[in-house]
Length: 188
Image 1 (tube, rainbow, N blue to C red):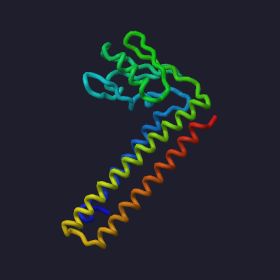
Image 2 (cartoon, helix red, strand yellow):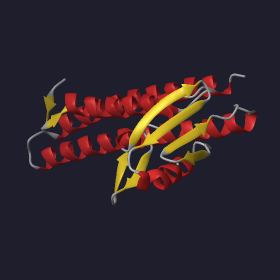
Image 3 (cartoon, rainbow, N blue to C red):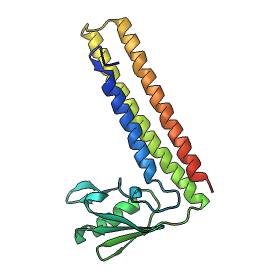
Image 4 (spheres, rainbow, N blue to C red):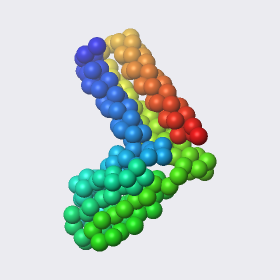
């Protein structure tokens, strides 16, 4: 597909696929009853005046099937790690013991499953927005190319249609991924 009208279609597709890939990794973090390090890895912690991913402030381990343990390297960041986990919207309640933050994973009741479905929906919407932003970027480049007389109006319509088709395909794949995750979460 490559370069059409000054727009690298392969790059657009790669960036759209990146949004889907990010969604899949976020879904991995949404637990379905078992503790997993991937549940807390995407959480960012306010550390030293900037946002740092959890793995950069401590060692994450899963000592038991329903427990996540984070050994925070800097004792001064323990409170920030606790706050970041509470604010992540995952319904987790961390407890600090010295430089270790322990998170007991609660049983998944119906209410909790509904909460997780909402979080999954939020992640999916962020992915859709990311794909639409890539589409807008591609369309803007095409319009500029047409304005600069690099492509004709017919080529603009053709290439715009291809960008839209690519967008629709990725949005459908995001919706499928969400439907599968919701089904997985709601299974009792």
